[in-house]
Length: 460
Image (cartoon, rainbow, N blue to C red):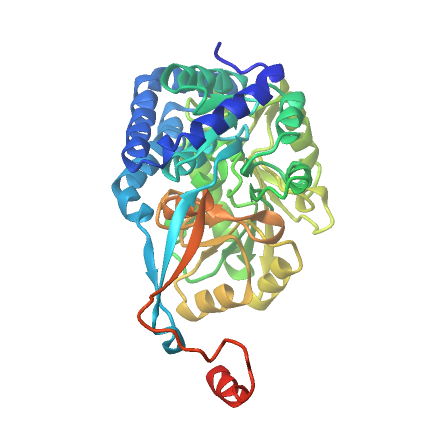
């Protein structure tokens, strides 16, 4: 059976709890073997993964390797560092604890649930799974039913290469998610929208289950005058229109210095043609919108402002051209929610303080982008704004650096992952304090008479 039937969810969780109790997953050698197994499984099924993502999102093969199959780099990073991550670490103690020693032991949580989204439906399931395996957990994974072909491929890969008592897949829609969320897990990792994130967190609260919520938001992109214009437009166009804009950290809107706005727009238009030709609908390098529902939501945004680049749509193909919109109002619908599609509004500013004030008037975004070589301006933006992460003079690339924790803040998410952060997310750091028998000072024991001055001195 490839997919766990919903009626068997309770049984599979119980089987995983028994497997976890066996202690097998605590063995570091076992974890490394399973990570290598996962890597080999991905390599063996590369063709099927490419075909599934083409079917779901019309995703170009190069994008699939860069943003989906490229998750192999995360596996390699975990394998390389895992032995060090799992070692207990010495913790310092103050002089008044001179007879004590302290250490911190990372230990696995148990059985975890990973719920993935549809926009990067392979990578955003496998990446947290790497952390769960590295930390020594059992896992149930729930791929997005909207990306149905990729969900099916994931289910087949996991069923072929892993014991369901260790890692299992549950496919399905809302009913499957509800069934899973009614169960008790030791951690829930969710990637998706804020509205569903709130539902996940509410369900987790019933069992006091810790959660990691990787959400999104409107990630701003500030463009200053002190830039290399050609490099800037190329990096913005790539970061915005890869996967047809369906990226949680895509630049959601541009905040452009007024004096450079016209040159920037001219550069953006030229770059769109360079990347996708005169008619991007015919380009083999441009993806499609995941569903009719999302297509219609995005088409409504085209009513706002003035379309100055693109704007063409083909409902039968769920195609929306790479689009740039000028003269938008902050009250327009396109500026009220995360766009999550190939539409890029432009807002101009005359002073960086205006741009910072606009960003700070909104919920904290998952990413913030700044194009500027001005070090003082860079520092000002970093110090006066808050976001899940920042990328200066590029877009999206921060997600590919395993040494950087990835996650949101405020409305854009709770917790982070990638590299060591993934291991930490799926681990409990157990603090251990040990005393010796060679000395036993009596200052803390009753009777207390006459000991208060010494206590005050020690506490001072």
